[in-house]
Image 1 (cartoon, rainbow, N blue to C red):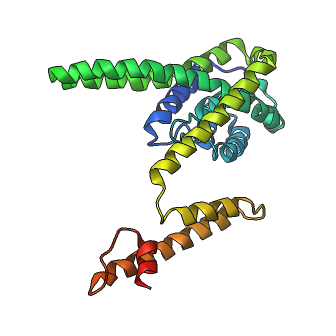
Image 2 (tube, rainbow, N blue to C red):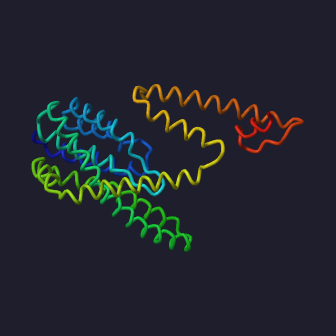
Image 3 (cartoon, rainbow, N blue to C red):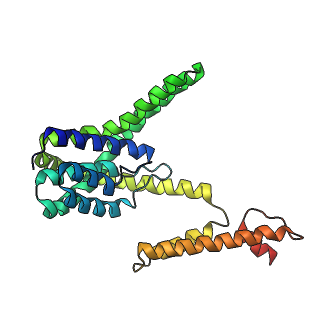
Length: 269
């Protein structure tokens, strides 16, 4: 499918906003279901792109930055795979191949994410110097530059894909050596484990550990749907709030509230 000049500009704009939203996280343009839908809207290939976005969204539910872990780039995966789907001109039949391309694109996007965040570190030091001078104008300018850099991180690959076409991109991804793709996957998995360990180390309290153990047990139940897990989570939250209120009211003539509702209930009995 050939795109006209206006459509190409609109696709690049969508990619730019998707990149910025990966940091701002306000309107969720970086989420696959929204990014793919917007690209389908501006290119006139809405239904296949919506199907692609919905499928990628289910995959991206497990992608999150936790602690020091950097998740695969959902914005790049969504934008690039949607562009390839549109350029391929296969409609719904091309969704499966676009999904297969999206995952290695998300892993490859980690390199761009790390590069952008490394540059952002230098920008923070520049903003510190403006803060020492009391120049709020300088701080705002460099903040906008840093945010726009995140948008360019997605807009440039999108423009390159539009320029070279879908075929060369598929060939390039297929030509990536196995040691590189496996290394990125293994390294990403190790960093995710370290990130979770850091978060657990900061949040580890007597009242959290029971929920942590319950989560591990529920994760082994394959028949549970997301709706079921959500219902269990809401129920546990309501139980926790009820225990909090009970332990808070027990200070009238009883032991003081320690801030640990489960521990206070146990101590009172």
